[in-house]
Image 1 (cartoon, rainbow, N blue to C red):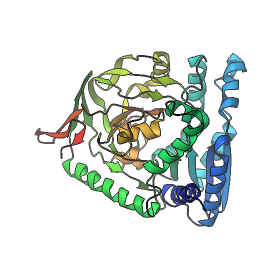
Image 2 (image 1 turned 90 degrees about the vertical axis):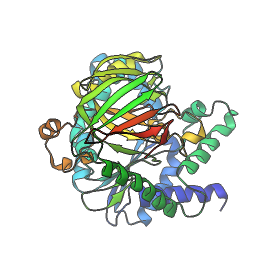
Image 3 (image 1 turned 30 degrees about the horizontal axis):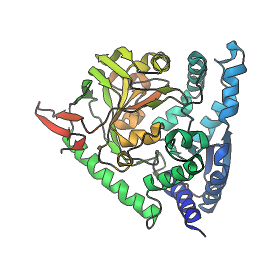
Amino acid sequence: MDQFTQKLEQYAELVVKVGVNIQKGQVLHLQSPIEAADFTRLVVKKAYEAGAKYVEIEWEDEASTRLRYEYASEDTFDYYPTFKAEALEKMAAEGGAVMHIKVPDPELYRGIDSMRVARATKAAAAARKGYQHFVRTNQLSWCLIKAPTVAWANKVFADLPENERVDAMWDTIFQMNRVGEGDAVANWHTHIETLKVMQSKLNDKNYKSLHYRAPETNLKVELALNHLWLGGGDTNQSGVYFVANMPTEEVYTMPNRAGVNGTVTATLPLNLNGRLVEKLSLTFENGRVIAFDAQSGREHLESLLDTDEGAKYLGEVALVPDDSPISNLNRVFYNTGIDENASCHFALGSCYPVNMKGGAALSQEELLARGGNSSLTHVDFMVGSAELDIDGELQDGTIEPVFRAGQWSI
């Protein structure tokens, strides 16, 4: 077995055993681009070896997806097949697990009317609201992973000869997922414990607010009462530990929906599932976005903010030091699942109820009353850099450094 095949085997085993952590007799719903068919089949094999009862594959084809936006009738973009949403919700209710190889082409919708994409995205989110509740409350194991596609590799590694780009992407995916040096599963257990040390430290601090300062950023973010910092992974309702994002370098928590004030400017481009937004800026007043702009893709940002009222508020605060493995690759990946783990970030839209003590058991109304946010969307955008300073306000009003020049200070 050559070195590449060995790494591929390790990676497939890693995402099955650590990512979704498949249990004997469990169903796995696997979403994958058709370009990743060979790797997908390897994941299927590893899932069955781990005891999966059934693996269902939902193939995704971006070329076919684009054809819809080019040729479908204008009155069809508010439609999403309810049978798909109902099947996902039933699978989640019956204790299944979900893995998604999520690698949208950053240029997929170039030249497409942004409102068509926005309408279809909102229709899907509305139809899948019940399923998303299972996801955001960690009632099932779910995991987002990466595998190269030609379009994505061409965007990220445009500086390399074309015939080297996909291989370079595979090498990078292996590296950021700690595959190739020793036992990848053991490497990840060590990494998770490291993240949990910082998680515990932040929970002990119990900051009242965080104040961000950087070029074109001056933002104060109050944290929700009884907020919890999480990192690495979490435990589902059956007591099974899983890792929702691979790779992951973040620790994250819940902001107070109405307690965000000031202006923040993104430091990395945002890929809105095939619509690119660059250098976005947002101004908040009492939690709500009151002004926004972007160097390019402003119309895509506007459609995101118009998803619903909750899309104009923050749902997540996440901290990642600038000196971290993905950041040190010095490359923009145009993929939020990776770029967010190279940078401190926020998310517009829905919070994760598990970021509040007892939050998973709250109704939507109770969650809002306690400072959480509810929305059909949840979109992360990156704000970290080597120029970012963050101060933390303790419950007694004491101010202390949390980040200086992009690095931990606590």
